[in-house]
Amino acid sequence: MKVTGGLIVSLLPALSQCAAIDRRQNGDGPQGGADATQGDLGARPPPRFPFPVIEFPTAKETVVLNETMYIQPGQVFDGQMKRYERAEGSCNEQAEGTDADTVFNLLPGSTIRNVIIGKHQAEGIHALGDAWVENVWWEDVCEDALTSKGLNTQLRVIGGGARNATDKIFQDNSLGGKFNITGFYAETFGTFYQSCGNCLNQAKRNVTIQNVIAINGTRMGIINPNYGDEYRLKDSQIKDLTRMVDKEIGNNVQTVPYTVGTGPDEKYALYNESRDAITAFEGEVLNQYTPEEPYEWLSEFWTGGA
Ligand SMILES: *[C@@H]1O[C@H](CO)[C@@H](O)[C@H](O)[C@H]1NC(C)=O
Ligand SMILES: *[C@@H]1O[C@H](CO)[C@@H](O)[C@H](O)[C@H]1NC(C)=O
Ligand SMILES: *[C@@H]1O[C@H](CO)[C@@H](O)[C@H](O)[C@H]1NC(C)=O
Ligand SMILES: *[C@@H]1O[C@H](CO)[C@@H](O)[C@H](O)[C@H]1NC(C)=O
Ligand SMILES: *[C@@H]1O[C@H](CO)[C@@H](O)[C@H](O)[C@H]1NC(C)=O
Ligand SMILES: *[C@@H]1O[C@H](CO)[C@@H](O)[C@H](O)[C@H]1NC(C)=O
Image (cartoon, rainbow, N blue to C red; front, side):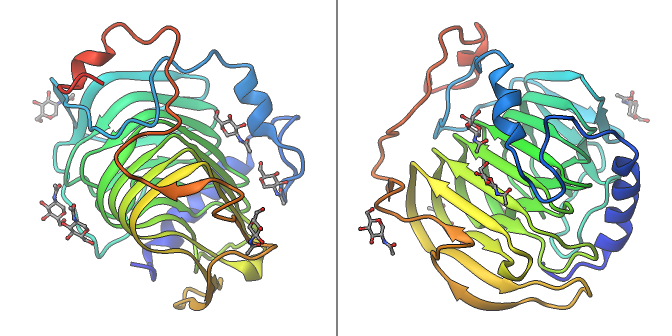
């Protein structure tokens, strides 16, 4: 669903909430100048899980939540590869969920790690400000897996995967935000990344996608060149994809955006299959990151022994 009346109600509270929070001093300006993502990641210890991994983990335990779990600023929530779902969770692909429908909401400066989001959840994760999403797996995506909201929100996704996303996996509804997606595995999806085409507040969004494996999808992206979106894709393996990046004229009046083109260019859809090593996936993961100190318990969740 692209036209989503629920956005009005769900975006505005997040915007006002986030506007009150100080931006990091080393962060991007309103339109994204310097690259805060790299600086922040440099300060973090190396990931303790491999990526990309093309087999889904099998949870041993399911945690049923009666309400959305909020991850607090500064908190690192480690789900230990348990499956999380909402007690009343159900998928309605026709409706854009609100922050009350999610399994997790991420507050600015939080990290969620080693989590499996169960099937039939109305909404997966909403990030209400800058956050890290590490080794998170979606077993069956409903409307969106991960939605970015708020002002200039920067998300870093490392590892993990999603399957069966009829519509989208990553949805950027932020005002001028940035996504960095590394080492993710996508299997059966509509759109891998979408910059909101008809949110009430629109600005340039910026996404960098690298070292992902994407199989059986409609497209790797939808962006709005009229707002100056930038989309980068590199070092990735793709199979059974209908098309790469669609460019639409987005709007802020909640009407249906219209497509003006598909494929790379020099300003918005910034990828080149040969230069950027975008290749056909042939069953072998080419650039897998293997941690020096993996979590000891991690391999128990991959029956095939990842
Ligand atoms: C978008 O992100 C890329 C990668 O971080 C960065 O090089 C580029 O300068 C950003 N663009 C803008 C307009 O901020
Ligand atoms: C994105 O995140 C990856 C993984 O942490 C990092 O290596 C890369 O430098 C980041 N890219 C940008 C443009 O910030
Ligand atoms: C969720 O609600 C059920 C039924 O009211 C209750 O039995 C259960 O303890 C609750 N779970 C949590 C985690 O609060
Ligand atoms: C994929 O989604 C469809 C429609 O929501 C559902 O019927 C089907 O069971 C899902 N398949 C898997 C493997 O999750
Ligand atoms: C590929 O995606 C389509 C939906 O677009 C789905 O019906 C089909 O089952 C998927 N194929 C495989 C092998 O998963
Ligand atoms: C892509 O990159 C290759 C190698 O750098 C170059 O020869 C080619 O012209 C580029 N294609 C486009 C469409 O820019």
